[in-house]
Image 1 (cartoon, protein in one colour):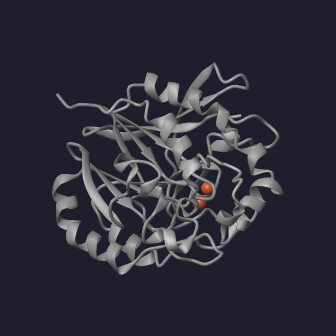
Image 2: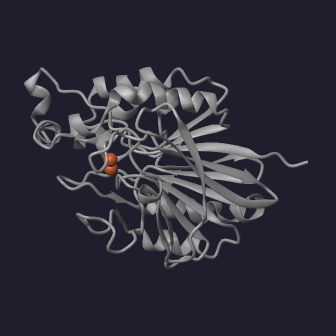
Length: 308
Ligand SMILES: [Fe+2]
Ligand SMILES: [Fe+2]
């Protein structure tokens, strides 16, 4: 009898902290902290609601939690500390997998000695640029750390190392897996006309990576964040590839309180993968769970609007 596996996908948390020491601001953080104060991120990201999200994750008996990055806002030790304090209560028996987002590697020097791993523990460490693990028999997880030294912009990049790894493991993936999950902060393709402030492609050099995924005989679910908006989007160029945007669970949206939303992915070797969304009403107590239809190639499903 085959075993059904349920995993959670959590998007951009953006824990924040306003530093008292002005010397930590002598870099890109000036922009980040300015954005916190002037741009109102501190009001928009309600980190005091994190315990309700953690409690829901703990209550739901997931096999693993997958975090698609942007734990922090300006890569400060305090911000990672908050993430660690909240999520370290999750039992060790539950798998914990994450990749960093651009906000977790906010200044260039931290790309070589990432605050991302220093501020948390090995449990949160992305370890390498790319790795493949079997979450369960026939269910693979490909983790991609695509953060890069990019000056003032926010994009990620697929490197030769990522491409070489995928090519080297192609045979194993085809032989052993019925479903592949990619966990990467950045999406290689976005639905057109959806983003209010379109920043252009956010994962550079992604085309050869998609072209290697496309001929694989199994469905590929690409879990990402970065755009703070929950959606499902069928790749217009690779029919077996579906994007799942985790959104930002702690973010106020459209003048409303955060709904603490995250996704559940259910895998069984003998059935198509199922994607559900967990989210709360205004008082953060009455959790709702909605099963989502998977999109066709090129189709966009606006989960942020559907779940109001
Ligand atoms: Fe983000
Ligand atoms: Fe991001």
